[in-house]
Length: 173
Image (cartoon, rainbow, N blue to C red):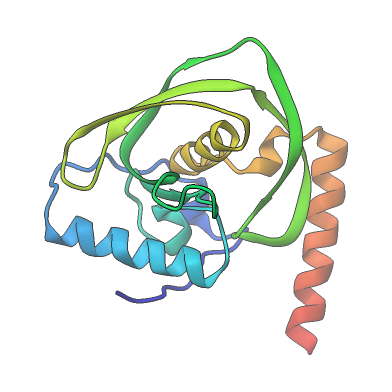
């Protein structure tokens, strides 16, 4: 297991759709372990393979809490949203690839996602609240979409301006 570098906004791979995984092998499981370690190191709740420079349709999530430490941890390979509610939910979102930036994003309140785990076993998740939001956010990454793409043009431009300024300041000091 290794902590990998998180790809940042502006790097091309974040805008490319991920390639479907065909082999559920040790290489995939090693990638998943690296993704989980990177996510924990960065104190995130989700991470998609493109965020560490790997163009595969794989994501990991961990929304565990003290009440139920065994529940809330997922590995999803080739996930797709198969159903989403008409009801919407608005909440702040951030992203490890766009650090220190967040804004309110509107998404379907409930989703059903199907895919596979790292061993190739079928998985289906019916989700609402934070899990629904996190699943949609990570699957967006696998399609080359970022949370900022869900913002109005005005909000997106303002966030990008703030992002560029923070990157310049970070480079200086």
